[in-house]
Length: 194
Image (cartoon, rainbow, N blue to C red; front, side, top):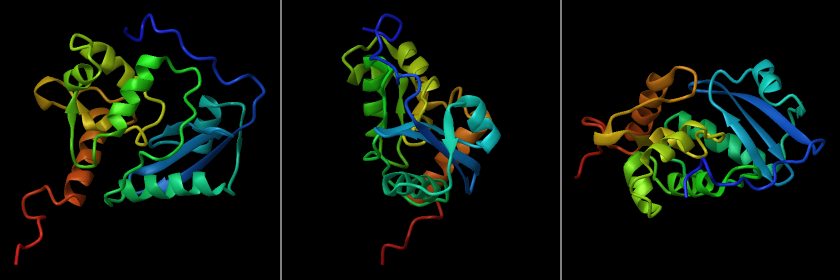
């Protein structure tokens, strides 16, 4: 079943408290929005407090972070600074997100730093080999970058395609380059064998 016919779970109820935080990274200012259940959204640069307020007007901007959110922020900072970090255990609040997109998120989160998959490979892993475009739409609507590392998902033939973060495909390439370098996958960056 693809995203266009998959009914979403009940969304976050109006009036439920949300909080937001904006923070500096090696790529620029990023942000997170969370509920009591987990992260509702993460934003890649340029996530100024004003942009966070426009995207999530009911979220209260805070500086003091709960431990789980502080760990998520530290992980995002480290990943974007070139450290190999696995963000797959960060709790997400996926209420309102259709089941197909949740499955795409889960498979995308399983892609290790420094590696990539194609939309077609994700679709095949879902048991829906003809759903590459639906996977692409799910990745394009990903509210959790880089926690759900949609930058690691490529078009057919491994080509980087559209990326909805500011800077588009160039931001995607930059993130992949940072991860490849951190994983020692670039020529000249490997450690000596002896």
